[in-house]
Length: 468
Image 1 (cartoon, rainbow, N blue to C red):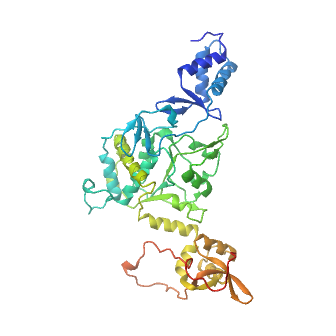
Image 2 (image 1 turned 120 degrees about the vertical axis):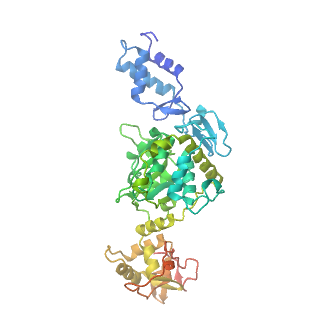
Image 3 (image 1 turned 180 degrees about the vertical axis):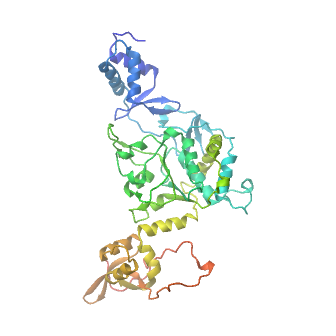
């Protein structure tokens, strides 16, 4: 213990001799502990100052001077997360997912977190694999142990790859996981397993509608996983913040209450479990392309529900971590391309139509015709009648919606002195569907086809290239 008369700077140096500390540009102090740099609270720092200063001689001013010296003396530029794209930081070291080799932690990796479990390459997770079969398995397929690579149900492959993405140290693969299904379908179990895998203190909850808010998104700092257990029926994806947090790995502004604003590069992955789809204010494919949807279509009856399942899976977390690392290996080999889930196409189609009902209008009321064009002044009346019950839209807004669907809208000269803004490559379908009709099972389409116009076909003659 230092003498009571020693100056605060000397006491701060004693702390620095005993602990490995750094301070970032915002004055936040971190201690290297158990393989990663842990951010220290003001309360913890002042408790250290009290311990070295002595309870009888200390004062708030002296403790403040000790902490201020630490912040100044330990400052250095920090770039977080310097592990390779294929490395996974576990509790007992950093694993190369390609080879399974493990190396020791290094302070210069500048990790904010590590997985909550040791890497044990021989660990198994039979209960977890049985759950996956209950949710997604084909009863007529060979047992899992007899299946070759690529023969697992696509839902299992995609889920394993996203768990692999969770454990990787970067956020460059541009996907958020949506576990979509009815109550009692098991969709929240993977979410809770993911939370246990990274550790509860490495998780946060940031709603999709708040991702544009610099104050509310402060919670994501230093976290590995953002989990949302339910999306409200009124939830609207804030497309700007959502796309930035999910995909760009670029700095975003965080401005927490009583905190200094900072530009921070988040690396947290995002998992949503819901039985209602969010609404989009982005009518392009930007948000939809970032969603990895895994539908849970089987409701587990009450007599098969296991109240002890979460506790049982907790016993298998080292095995589940190995299972996730296998998914990471496959994902790295494919350069971030996730397995496509066919059952998710219908969900995505529904979201596309909700975001832009013009897509459904194109299917139901128009016919592709390379040599035709429809004036928007005519088409807007057809659309508003088709979309009755909703607010009418203007000709200009219809043109905007059509372009967002990938259609060609241009000025077309229809006479020597007449030009009209028109949709190119379609004509109105004169056929009116009956009120009811007989249908064969094979005629039912699970997902309506995307209607494409004549973007690459012959345009009508005398097209004025100026878009409206």
